[in-house]
Length: 333
Image (cartoon, rainbow, N blue to C red):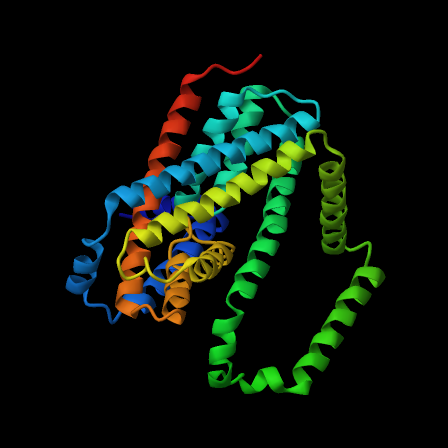
């Protein structure tokens, strides 16, 4: 026993706690959200609602998810080729598919993995791949912005109808809040100027400089029209997929495109929260959006549960296929 305990302690000390926390915290957050969402759920009624789904429509919907992800791969290939590197297209597509499977295991790790695997397979500098990844993500932000605006504009009549029922929390109407925000912003800008040699400030400035460079590359890249078409295609397929999912249930099929788009936006924004493939935040945001459009909460939970589970299984299966295919291909060069 006297030998076992010190050995066990040494093994524990060798574990990288930072890596553990990166996995444990998002997973715990997702599970906490799910607990709060499901704690009063009648699971027999939930299963009964799920069984009413039209699985053919759900299957068509996830097919559009795959099409979107393949177009994402083609768009990423355009970015890499704009830097005068030429990866094999199959490797890019398989890496994108594997990206989503790995994100279910470790939040945000899929993006790092896809850059690493293309670095390994096609000998493209990792820094250049990360640069294209940043542009890829910035492009998604630019695409989401008009979708959010359209979703809001299409639902203005609904918002106006319920505006009189909304009461802003006291802290939002407090002048001290806005004065505090202005002061905090001034302090932040002053810190960036006064402590420009600090390592943390230098890191922030490096990130800002990199983002400027990335945007410049994006604006000057060849085949901008094709890049834009891919971007529109990606998000159109995501929206179409969600439309099919809503059509698969009788209690969401009637809510109309404007409501569907708003709920889609809610779910998309929730994906910014680090979690295992959106586990927890996506269901909560989707349920909140559906309930806002008069869908019964229990049925909204059934929709979120069935849709998330079905899509997740599909993405993981496609991702595992991509990972297996990459492991079977030889390195380029």
